[in-house]
Every structure is written in structure tokens, then in C-alpha cells.
Image (cartoon, rainbow, N blue to C red):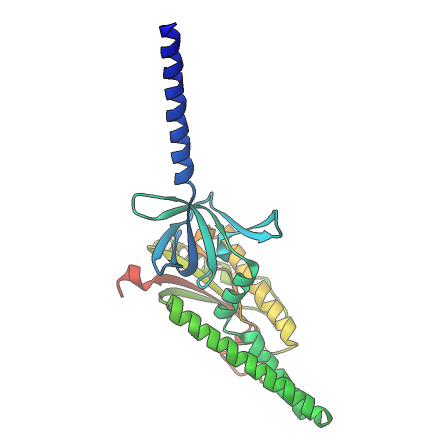
Length: 298
């Protein structure tokens, strides 16, 4: 009888130890950080937490990037969506360097749109102001209505720029990077596919990037002012996405080291659009190798 009681006590002790181990493992996998991305460097990103602490989050091939859609559905995205200025919630476990090794990073679609607008420099809003000004000159009968629209658009532009300034002040400058290499790819009128002559240059840039500590690749697409603003925005998006896909598939650049491609539309023109030559220079994608100045020591 005493032997049976001893066995029961021993088994209960084993169950208790196993329960504590499981609870400990679960707790280690449930660490989380909420804040705003204020830097990307290689396969890591820096997140400014709600408490004001800058925490390094490590991204791995197993890290899931999720955008909630409703109560039970979640949209799976690539790590290229994790751009500076984006509010995120990262879950995982802290390593011995106090870095959160993330198994999941989630954010809301509205926050991503805000972060992308900050990077794109509000080009769509500026284009709308220009369109309104042209309509005022072309149709004097609608002057009052167009003037009201213009003032509203200008007020929206001012409000957005003020919001960007406030975000930069709160979360730190988003451009604290050195440019260590750059390639410009030009496109024909209405074209989005990469001309073969630029592919060796892109592959050489990708090879150079892999020798840079903590590099990230930035891709920005542009268009000339030929055609509508909506069409040019679409062309700049597709050009940037095609170059990004080429760098990933042919250049072997991992998504952990790429920022989401930026669609800049007709902003930041580098040549006059009054000539065919100037238009050709403006139809471009600019690819840059970036390294955080903190890593470079500058």
C-alpha cells in the first residue's frame, strides 16, 4: 500500500514538472513588441516601442507577415512590406542579445498605406493640385468650383506634410542611410518590362550589395508626364515591381533585405518633359544599395 502511494506521488511530481516546462516554453514564444519601424538593416529591423525603447527585431525565413482581414481572416504578405514608419506588432522570443526573434509580424492595412505615402512624398496629392490648376485656366465658367477644390487639395497637402513632419520628429528620420551603389533603368513610353541591356547592371549591383554589411535595397519607379496621372502612377508601380522581382529571382536578393518598391509617379522629374529626350530620362527606376549610418559609423 505504501509502495503504491509512493508511485502515485512520483508520477504527480513528473506531471507537475512537465507542466511547468510547457508553460515556460509557451511564455518564451509569446514575447511581443508593439511600436513603429524606424529602420531596416539586413535581416533585422529596429522598432521604437510604445515605451520609447528601440528594440531590434530579427526576421527569419519562417517569420510570417500578416494583415488582419476581419475577425478570423489574415492576409499573408512578404517582408518587403515592412517599411520604416509602419506601426507593427511583432511576436516571438527574445534571444540572449535582447533581440526579438520574430515568428510573426502583423499590421493594419491603413498603417501600411500611411507609411507608403510618407515614402512616396505625397506625389498623388501634388499631381491633383496641378490638375485642378489646369482645369481652372481651361474653364473659366467653373472657376469658383475649381478654386474651392484647389484650396481643399492644398489644405490636404499641408495637413499631410505636417503629419509627415510630426511622424519624423517622433520616430526619427527615415533616411539615415548611406547610398553605396545605384543603377538607373530607363523604359520606353508606356513600357514596364526591363530592357535586356540593364540586366547585367542590376546583377552587378546585387553582387555588390551582398558584400555590404546590413544592406537593404531600395527600388523607386517614376514616369514622364505623358498621359493621365492615374496611368503614370500605374506605370511607375509596375516598373518598380518588375525590377524588384528581377533582383529577387535573378539577383538572389532575399526579401528580408528589400524595402517595398516605391511608386513615385511623375514626382521628382530629372529632365524637362517638353522634349522626347527629357521624357525618356523621366521614365525610370532607380535602384539603390543602402546601409544604415549607425553600422557604417558615420
